[in-house]
Length: 143
Length: 182
Image (tube, rainbow over all chains, first blue to last red; front, side, top):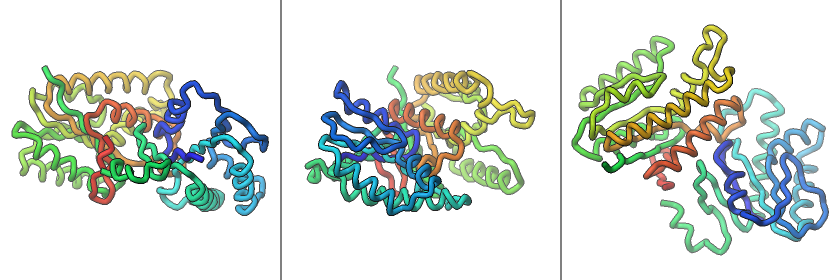
């Protein structure tokens, strides 16, 4: 599993599109993909929106984590998760946003431990921050 | 003629980005140092802060251009080989995007208004780079939070991506440490 991570409007989806080139992918915005096995690459984006909607529906954090785990274990093919960083701001005044921020943060932490590869995007520039057999090259991205 | 060097620096509040940008300009060459300031004073404290900064820079032989809007108007004040520091994109964008708010007629609500300003800014940067030796552009990291103002943040993201693409160097500041991304 590959995570593409970064702030809003930093070019994360464009990076994924460039990565895919002509490869076929099923793209899921703001939702978990259906739990059927696919051959093509699965892109899961807008996770923060999905979390918000599920919380508003009354689901618990534990239920969301279970859904994420199920999604991770179902797919045979490669998954790319597009995760928007929204946890570097001021504590929100709205209760639902505070809850969402906590849940999103913990789901991201879980996904980060599961990921084989993590790419952080900063205004279109990728930086490998985990994995893909490139651990020995990580220093090159840290200058 | 060779194009001037473009350096993009972004960081959080008090990350040391402005000080770092000033150091880049100071050590880049011996020609005139120019500071383009886009901040606007909305109260006395802000006014004093701006004046204090301007006096500090004057001591250090900087020439200051106050340019809250319409960056193209700064071009005629520039000289060949100037070393320019523009601080910063976020204030400029807010000034341009919400221009007309006093009369309830903001640019952001008018079709094509910001698009035209953005095109002019791109042309202005290109034009500046044909004259000056160095153009250092400072901006803020404000996109790692909940999206509060989608239009502002989307514009800022687009502008940053374009600047990073065009820049010879792109630097992210983190608590006084410079991480060169490009």
